[in-house]
Image 1 (cartoon, rainbow, N blue to C red):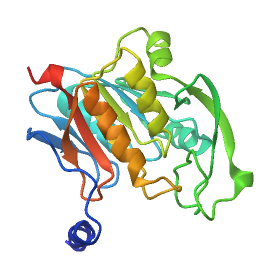
Image 2 (cartoon, rainbow, N blue to C red; image 1 turned 180 degrees about the vertical axis):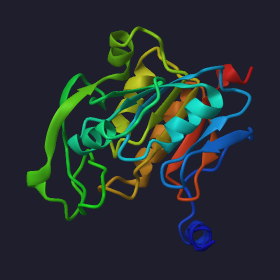
Image 3 (cartoon, rainbow, N blue to C red; image 1 turned 45 degrees about the horizontal axis):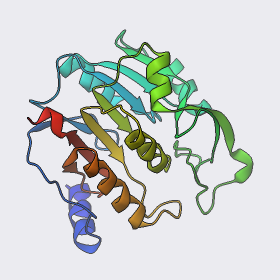
Length: 231
């Protein structure tokens, strides 16, 4: 109850940048921290989900496998995540790859979080993060990963990639891949990222056929559906 009240207060003091454009029924899967929505009617049978940014919470992924029969390709290049995944008992429908998502193929620098209890490495250093703890890790473009992993485009693309999402979405718009659903955490207000970058990113997704069906109470997690699924 207290967390809910905090969320409502945050919406009043700092209203979200966007509101949903289409009203569609969805099922919220996972914990409050790591959960996401999947559309009830528009989600295909046994969807292929590419999930970028695992951290230490795969509650959404497991929920999607359990309730939608999903196949999940999960990606996270940070050593801490890899060590955590190695300790988990995972279903056959869940596969993990120690690779990050970016707008280029090669390597990228990932900056450590400010506090050791946090798990998310980011594209830009936080104010108090230690630059000596930054790591270089492999990254791929979405199109490259699709090609390397068998050529099947994901039905759902989930990204919680700590600032890398802006370049990735520009790369997505320039290519031919159009996942039916996009689940994206935007990081405006963090790492020095201005609100305008998220506004521009959302407008860019609208231009290639995506419509917003979900915005979280925090105003950072967005759910998009492509109009091809609405016809």
